[in-house]
Image 1 (cartoon, helix red, strand yellow):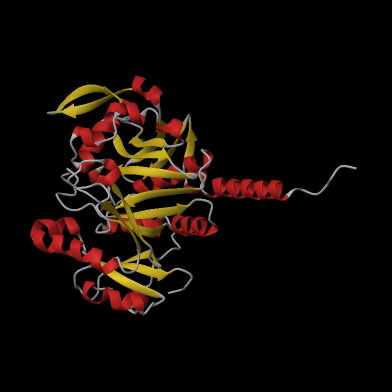
Image 2: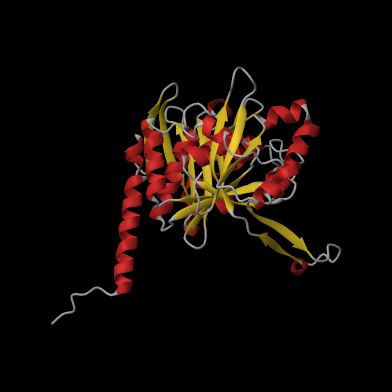
Length: 368
């Protein structure tokens, strides 16, 4: 008689397959108003019109496009345009961006190169709206590298959110169950997208992740970065995306956030030892404006952020045993485990005062 009992291994595989199928359904583009359009998707956005979302690969080196150089059209292919858009959004020199030959193979790694553009104009210097670049990671996690949105469209129509949703959907289809990426902790707009609108969590702080970036956007400051973990097959993630889609999600209650103990550099060690369930940490209302108005204060704030958050979070830093030797084997990574994750971001203006931006930290295994 055939054995009707499923082995533990097969049962586990069946559960995982079911979870993936549910996750794919939860992140399916049609749930968020996108309509299938040839090999991509499209959606009408107020004030823009029909927007097309497409995944690029090596074959798009054969796709005609153009850039604008001194006001004149310069013929380029679609992949070359993505290279130039990276330079434009971040103000980086050509050698700092992802080149065409790497963009062409990212889909082969389980990654993706996604672009958004106005259908009526096409994917070119006039019609482009955004892009997202990611590589396949380990174990089973997509590594998102860059997300860029046209300057005049930032923060207005959720183009970045839609690109991330598609990135997550394509990641699931490629076999990934999570995505990770980094962002500058001083940038509240990025924090709101990642923590609130996507429902991701920050689990670690890396000191000087990229060295000093040669970028007009970031300037010559240490590249300390939060690492975001986005659980693509989590029911919690799916509920957050659905609540954002339907307008039900309101974000953290500002009064409850302000009731949490505040982390400041001078008192961070003591507060961490007291192990509160949650805490809050303030960042500038607009770090770019602060850099222009008072660069010294902006730089000092970044330095204090390290001292403030290091007692709470898992921190990675380079370990150099002999800086003068010039040998890579003398450089490693120091890992200092922390007990807290960054789980939320609150932004509020009270009584006509300056906007206040707060990170919400939660002790693992606790509530706040």
